Image 1 (tube, helix red, strand yellow):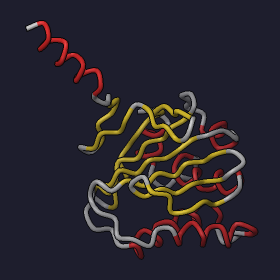
Image 2 (cartoon, helix red, strand yellow):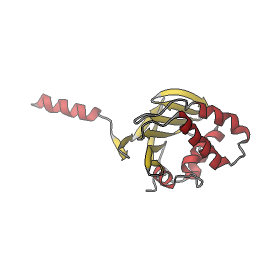
Image 3 (cartoon, one colour):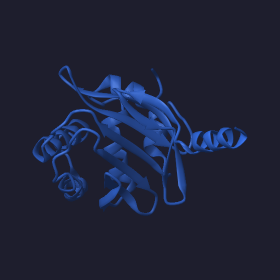
Image 4 (spheres, one colour):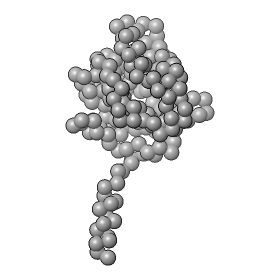
Length: 186
């Protein structure tokens, strides 16, 4: 009996813990990229009309509600998009990114234009329910884009990270519920 209890406790202690269930999807307390561990700052749901598209989480070195400080920080951080909706075409994903960048930058992409196009090119696959996209900023490297844990590519520059993360958390973010959730304001 003692051995059984020890075995059960051992199994329970090795199970991952989840701090937040959003839209039926579990977002882990922490994400580890290389030697950096990031904590879940907050999460929300991205909706298109009434359809739940993905559960989005913002991961930082330490929690913060200050979107300006987050955008300006040259430190590791990530956004996780865990898809709820099944079957988002690559053209819809790219179109969504185009809308997001245009919302933040207007028509003045300046020196970011080629990097925005590079970023969009990583979304050349259809996204299904339970697929996960991670956007991971690493100082001195840039923003890595991972699809289901596999790297699709890297976009260099802190300036690019600032614009990309602005789509989600700035005062210009189009999806206020998702923004508030990621900033831990809800």
